[in-house]
Image (cartoon, rainbow, N blue to C red; front, top):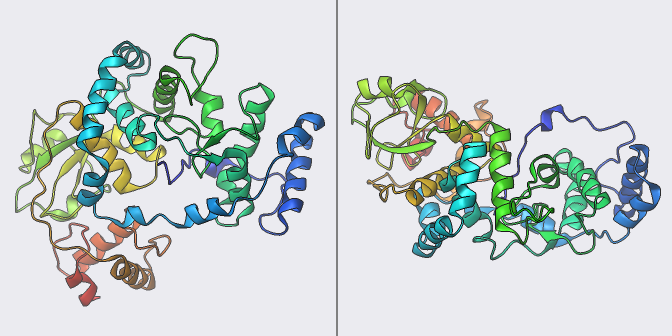
Length: 389
């Protein structure tokens, strides 16, 4: 379910002069890819065998355009993904692979709750890993002109996996966006972080849970995970808090938040760690403090709602209570959200794609406009805000 992809190192990638342009005839595009691969030093015979079975997959484009699940409010989204079955299965897996998780925590400092959460959300603990042909998906998305720079490097990473015998262009399958295995890793992720967790001499992310979990832990450390630190904690906030301080733009230490009346619902705040107060459904809904490790999760997935849900689920798997839902003000429908985004864009705010999804850019714009209008600046868009705009 890793629907929004990693952008790690994307800004550093530059297409070679011989790179095939997106769009145009698909067969011509593939021919350009073959020429580029040979120019990169790959054996022409290997290149031909690798690209020979590739086909355009229209279902991949359809899946790329259909991501309405991210339009749901956080609590609805979380209740949909966090079932009693996933909780019980997650706790059972934690016991079954206790030795592996101990090794991951020792080697990479990544808590088992985080890996269990992604394992659950990405593939239901390996139960459904996707049935899209991976090479077809990567080439189709590279040919499409929406985000070609994101997917092109993954084609050549897959070619390198093929050359070492770890990728079958005709049979390797996974998610529609090219991720493979139980925790859904892209080909470049596998090259950089693939780890033999079960000691059989191979990295098998589709069939070996130890390999998948060890590789995921190594990747998170590579992305900046800080060993032994929390990532998310539910809090209670005072009614008189300056709401403009909430969100991902303003960080204070746990001690400073405590001085403003913020309290941990369970345990105590990390006094010396910087944290952001997150109100996913405004001041009337649940509240969390997000520590530096929380931001690392955005390098795994770009969706605010998905990342917050995974981070919260990880705390549940490690013993946190069910969150307090509160009584948030009714939010906007997807059509109303798109109208709001259009109005914000017209005012000069960068809200990204007009997609009806309350992402980070839209939240920041909403909070700024709320301040200017003298409304509580909790970054939660309401019908009243839409009316006033």
